[in-house]
Length: 312
Image (cartoon, rainbow, N blue to C red; front, side, top):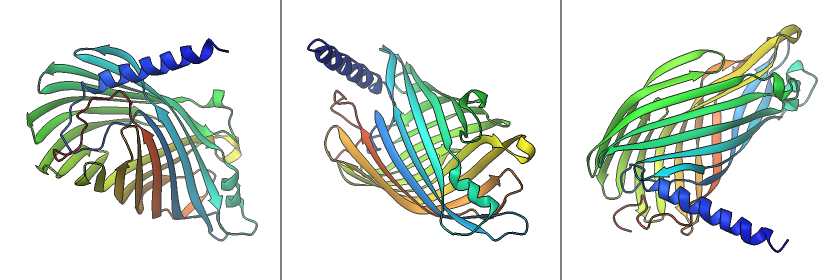
């Protein structure tokens, strides 16, 4: 036992140091929120109602837990690769009583297990090729064994160019496959209005306005797409899909307690865009309030100049 602890500490130090080295390659403007090494997130959204033919609507609260940790794989002067295993669990909590076929939603075990990948290749001092990938299994494990859930995947490739110290722009392509194959263009634009404010656009995912209150406090006003897709059973035990596409309109507060630990707190409104539900279940109301609490850990060996404002 006396040998294991020094080995564990040495491994932890090496992972942190290598991860910090990879972070130095990352593009980005001053003032942005710091990169997250390990993430713990809890989300709750209200206002969801479903019913079946001839039955009353039932109200649900959606609760979600998420964790991810980035692990460095390659760390060279002009190229880095990190992998991020992640796990998500989601539960639909029934808020009303009475017999109803929709009540079975509260017994579903919605789980996602997967692996993220990100690579950054420096082409010059002001241009990069950034690629990101994701592969996961996402399903209702109360109905299906994990071995029966097919893989989903997504890949993004972007060319990013820094035009000045206050502006960077990029474009690329997003390819994803869950129940359907989707190919979408990607547009990146980051601009600092001042040392303490800026605009961050990453379409088709998010648009955000940033205000730095202090070197450790940031406020965001943003809209962000949120997609969830789970394999489950439909009618007559045939394969079915439970899929939602939402857009969150929220205010987010990012706080760094010290050089290692930080927190994000957000609240807003989740607007449903698309809702595919199995077993003849009818969505009545799919939009409502949403709130998120997140704790994150930065690398303890990160560079001294973080992505804060110039006032730090």
